[in-house]
Image (tube, rainbow, N blue to C red; front, side, top):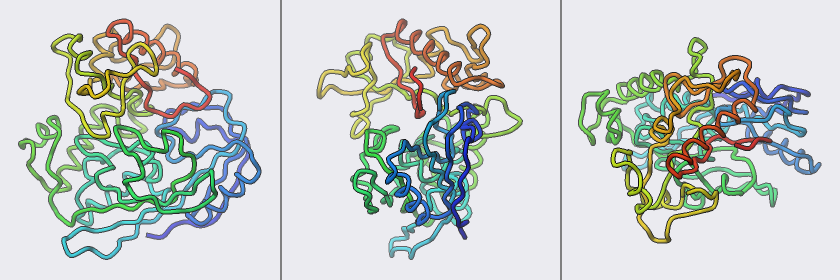
Length: 373
């Protein structure tokens, strides 16, 4: 696949035009870079001036303020998927430019008979943004297939290859979300040459496919099932679906200590977690609170907590153009002309309701720029 080349600059660009939630005031300057080399050069030039900067991929996980951004937005638009020589055991390496749309990459893998990311179908955004929060859905996470990223480090100005072990990937987090600044220019993946999917590990997906957990199905069949499930929840970008004008899930599923989970209603969904996920802790009344060290962790359903706190699908504050999706209680949607502050106001209301009802302080999943919830 060829990638576009060239660098273009625009001034006074509405961030609403760069985000799937369609909110955000003007950015003073937007620089589009058409290749990894040009992205590095553009970033170093911006950084040398010491001006504020922001990287925007597909804009699907970003909520900028109505005041906009008084600095430069770097927009990777370079596309390219390069297949490296397969290993003797059937594993195939791909090297992908940061600007490649994520779902186009997944579609490519399915078409080429490469298994390992098919359950991540339909997720909007760019490939370079995917490792930032370790995207995941329907029993798969990017962390299971990513090998390394090419990373331009803001602190040093160096471009280097960071192996997956150094990325700190956990549940919707990474070293980048925890403060390491810079730009992902390329991502390297390792997949399996197979016409069958990875084992199905999500009950809802297994039910949709009519198979048992652990079964494998043709890649195309699994991709189609995931896309159908996501569409039913308004989670596939669709100009004809007002529920898709969102930033996806607005809150992460909270991870709490087992002893706290026992204080919740018995019917509250929960799943045991471990490894990296155990480090991602829901706040219990205090944004920095955490369960007792070494206590077993469990993951709760944010959607269940929201709905049981009295915030139903389609809910909106009086006079607001922001609303909870009519299809999925985890998504906040722009019903037309909503401001970023209206989105934030609804998010704050939801957090307060869940905290009052259950003592769990939900954490926002999108990146907030100039906003607090």
